[in-house]
Image (cartoon, helix red, strand yellow):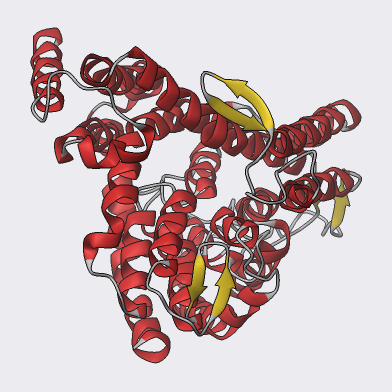
Length: 480
């Protein structure tokens, strides 16, 4: 095994060194200098997540940190040889401080706060109830974020369906709708739209995506109801019952309701991150350059630090003020957030070349039409972080030289193209477990609660079957 790893390491080192053996990379043209093979560690990281849980599940559970560290080093060491220690440190600090830390802190805060809200009472996971819960969660996603809505709604949904034998499909459609499609209406809904807002896309402009969201929601809820009704009917015939006939019916009651205050604190922190840049302390009002703490040549912005502090305070207050009994009834553990934190640090580090190449060469891809932007943004968002992917294609669209459309800081973008970029980054991230932050978290929570979820490729079989036809319909109706 070790010999094979050494061979892989040596081979990738040679590939990195192939373009040139001695040059100092400039941050601005890194994507032009990197060979396409430099994405191999990222591919290896994704394949590890996809394959190891299938062939060696127990080994995978114990060795996830080692795998993430291994692929990170397979990227970082050859990169350091080719580009120098200074550039390596710069790229690592940039991805960790500007992307990973805000990402994982937001997830941690929402996970901690939502874990303190418990829906108590008799809740039967019937097709009607499940469809209603999915619909409510979808509507909430645009206003408290896909991550917030996912963390808030997944446990009641799991509790309602504890009696079901076949329930993985419930979680899968939850990821489709609540963790992705529902977050398209406001910048709070999903990180890509927040980046658009920071680049002068009006806050409520994304409400124009409402017809597309509702079309997708109606189609997917209809498919879900038919499928769930079929499984429900089979389970009733087998003698399973959603309610114990001998147990008294307990009225619904929400415990830990004060955590909604902390949830609002977190949402407010996200909005504040974008709002405070209008003040000179946080950003240069002429150039738009953010002020912050310099770390190895990277500016860690004050507005991001403010957001992180507020989120951590909200999480701390939630943990201190919520009764242990409530979290125990929620079957709350730190396992899911630990798994996401470990695996996604490897994903973020190894995707540095992919994002750099995309940023440098995205404008040369010949993407000019709305349908191109929809699918390119979406398919890349299925495997890369959808926020920087959105930003790359937003910049590409701003460089088209259009004069009619939405005036942003990167140029004027035709409304149909901006809709395509926004919808692609939010919707199509549902194609894989890693396409959007809450996807993986929801899967981890479901598995922790005894639900056998599909593998990485198994989930993709569901998304290809259920989502791709819907996205083709979106293209034909809205983007052609």
